[in-house]
Amino acid sequence: MKAAVIVFPGSNREHDVADALERASGHRPYFVWHGEGSLPRADLIVLPGGFSYGDYLRTGAIAAHSPIMREVKTQADRGTPVIGICNGFQILCEAGLLPGMLLRNAALKFICRNVDLKVEASDSLFTRLYNAGDVLSVPVAHGDGNYFADTDALDRLEGEGRVAFRYCAPDGAVTAAGNANGSARNIAGIFNAKKTVLGMMPHPENATDPKLGSTSGRPLFDSIAEALG
Image (tube, rainbow, N blue to C red; front, side, top):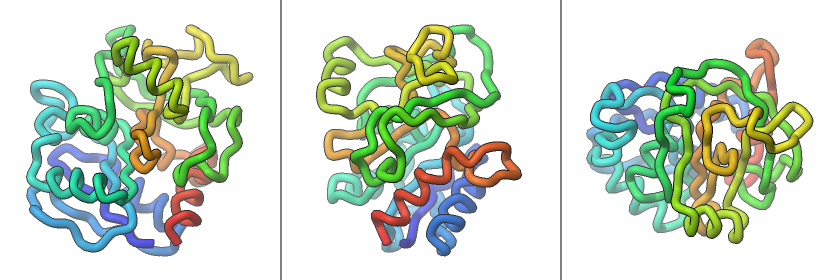
């Protein structure tokens, strides 16, 4: 499996996600600068975390119009899997590859800690090695992770089984207290209609090694590697 990790000015998790992918697949991903107009052959495209363009104007708003994003959209339309993590999720929403948007955290404070996540869907190439209902411990590090969409869009996501992860309590209960940032319906990650594009705010790449304090994120990368060979 070969993956292409897109690097924007302000990305800061590109090496973390590359390490996680290499652990799972045995292959080091390509790094592709956002100003490029084409991608090397890739089985997976990754938009990593960070603060592209310093979050100027709105998180992900400028990066969504980087030259490489035209090719990312083309490849996504052709079925190439895409995952966007944290800032990558924001960029996917701004680029129209996923519905909704990410607003300021409800507490108006930057959050950097482990949170509990409930796996809502295991029928995707990203989550196939999880079971629905599994509870993960994964870090977050964001100031704008409050997922918002209108009621119709939220109902559509729910009805089509496109909610991938929710913030929860340690026992898996989906409660207001377990909602890290005020996201609508505790949503932490969503799919596109074909479940070939995943956006999520927490950082599974930083939960793939015991030295990092958790391995809850490792099955996500193992799922991808298994699905894409």
